[in-house]
Image 1 (tube, one colour):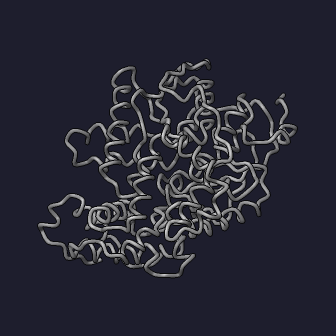
Image 2 (cartoon, rainbow, N blue to C red):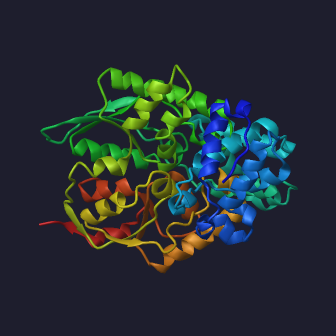
Length: 446
């Protein structure tokens, strides 16, 4: 793609990076075949290629974002399926992130939209605030039909109420800054930091609890770093660069303190949406003299938990005939390029694993997308659930809290984290989400 940026524009590192990305695009249109919003809407401007044209015109012309640009960029899930499909290697993620930041700086949203986004940014990255918000949502659930009728914001507020769990899980003892020592006998013990997370630590603290048990049992010491908070992913994808960078810096500092102290072999993440952002810290802070090196170190240490567990040589102690539908989160398969490790681990642990048809298509979660774009997210969830239920699995496994919440609202099939099944198969407790009816299928291995 030909570009016409001025030298003054290219003096801005973010603009120079976007210009290089734009020049990589060859207009081939392969991305349209795998873009969820294009599949739903059939509008060229709701495909990656169409959005690239809009972003190019906006950035190249030095223009403030228009209502049309905002509409189509807001509809993008950042699922990154287009990056997996693209034969030219267009780094769409960095381009759309830049566009969202530009929109946040130059476009004046309606008051209701601005207020909702500010509330999400204020609440979701902070577990204490999020827990209070979920209690409020529980009280407001009976009024959902009335809320849905409110002009402009009713559908979004109703979506927030719909996503709230009927009951909040109890507080998990391991969900605190602490060190959890290894208990397994291994010649080489390892030490890792595990991201506590924000929303996940409230909605499904059992995910990290299972990871800690699994890792400890296989000779790995796990630390929840003191001072670590939200990784910044949620606000980053809303274009709120100041918020996301401040959150990321706090977490980077906490992990670097651990790495420089007792040492770290890896930084593990059980939410693939967070993992994609953390692995991108080196890029995000490339021009920050105080954080460039530290961020690059963190990104180099970052692993999805299944990447790391795949190196441990786990061995099941039970036999199972459970059929598992593995849902690969977009941030896992497209954002991080992790496609085989989770399924291989589940098979190694004795489960029958089935791929979900149209597995490359997003479930509609995408951070805050299922709140900000509830109609499109609902259609994608229905499509995903229909494909999963066709497989008739006993359980659904995934590696991302957003997907677990989104899909779980559309089906009665229990949904768990991959590490919960691995923990169970290697001697841990049965995942709480799986009913007692599944237990007779498990017997002690001889």
